[in-house]
Amino acid sequence: MSENLTLSIETPETGRLDKVLAAALAVHEDAAGLGLSRVRVQALIKEGCVVHEASGKAVLDPNHPTQAGDGYRVTLPTAAPATPQAQAIPLDIVFEDEDMLVLNKPAGLVVHPAAGNWDGTLVNALLAHCGDSLSGIGGVARPGIVHRLDKDTSGLMVVAKNDFAHQKLTAQFSDRSLSRVYQALVWGILHPLKGEIEGAIGRHPRSRQKMAVVPFGGKEALTHYETVEIFSTFASLVSCKLETGRTHQIRVHLASVHHPVVGDPLYGTRKKIEGEKAARGVIAVLHDFPRQALHAGEITFIHPRSGKRLKFKASLPPDMKALLKSLKSAT
Image (tube, rainbow, N blue to C red; front, top):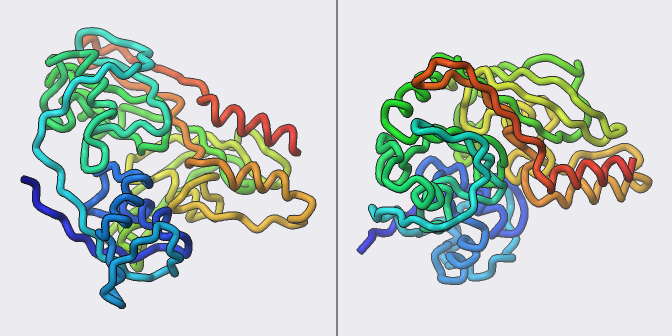
């Protein structure tokens, strides 16, 4: 029988409770990684598991309006030490050998099982595909997982099929010989069009559910960026290369220079656009995109056994391609 986990959450923004709470839980230090979907958060609310701290009363309506800074107490089950089960979920495998595989993760797929997502995850799919050969370094819940992508970020991941490969690949993350390039659609146009964003990343000083560029106590972080395509003054497609790999690094860095990723539920915002009435169609296209428009499009690393340098690329997923097509038509 699993114990309950009770968390105090301060809402980072104004909005409907289920949406704001799901975003806050996604990065809470004790809840991040539990894979709590918005549907699961709605269920918790209806079950009376969310209490407004000021009134002491349970909030039962997922549509309940919140104000930034409101406090809520959320009770949810802790992760059970159950062994994930193999599930025949299709995988887009780009490369595979006896040591590792590279796959193209779709947006919406949670990486490993946790409360709210006990199955239907990447780990369940990998167990079906690889059997017991996955590296055990990540523990029973995360076999073979060397690094993560957020649930709603698409793109390339490398997975270790044995402990030797896991150790070698992890070392490349540490010494930065492994590199990753992402494509992000951002609000507005960065100036200059090519450059770098540097700033230590740590917990937000006022909202513990978020990360932020902080003056003290953060971890060094550096993101190189280059503008690929501009859509009038409304948005631009940017290529971002990670020099470091901090939590939500690209999302935080781009938001820190006032060009957040389109569709980002935590760090994004509806950008004020000059002549909004005339641009209403473009704004609607951008504002209605249902996830952060972020894709891990390229990964380069040294093969753990052969020592050969490998590079893999994955084109933008269909939803981002459709978004860019809509923007081109609208502008």
